[in-house]
Image 1 (cartoon, rainbow, N blue to C red):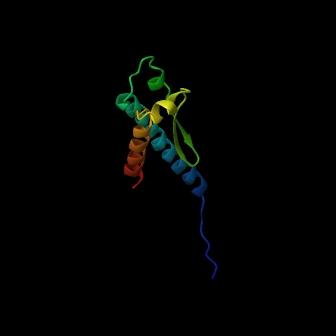
Image 2 (image 1 turned 45 degrees about the vertical axis):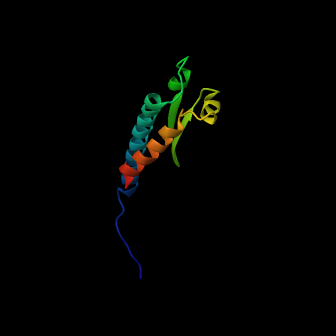
Image 3 (image 1 turned 135 degrees about the horizontal axis):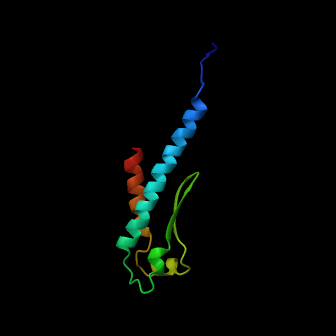
Amino acid sequence: MDVTGDITGLESFMRELEDEIDRVVDSVGREAEEYAVEHGTYQNRTYKLRSSNKHKVEPDGLLLYNDAEYASNVEQKGYDVLSGAALFAEKRLKEEFE
C-alpha cells in the first residue's frame, strides 16, 4: 500500500518548532544563571564566581558552566556554585516540556 500526502510547509514548521524549543531552553538557562547567583553558598569575595555563571543552548540540550578557573574547586569543597542551578534547570525544563 502506498501512502501519498502533501507535506508542504513541514520543513518550515519543524524549523519553527526547533526555534521555539531553543527559546525556551535559553530562557531556562538564564533563569538557572540567576538561580546560581542568588543561591550560591560560598563567600563571594571577588564577585568573579557569581559573574562567571553561563549557559549555552546546544543541539543536545542546555549546557551550564562557570568559566572561573577555580569554580570546580569551590564545588569540591562542598559549596554550591552551579550544582543547585543545574538541578533547578532540570526541574524547569521538565515543567516546560512535560
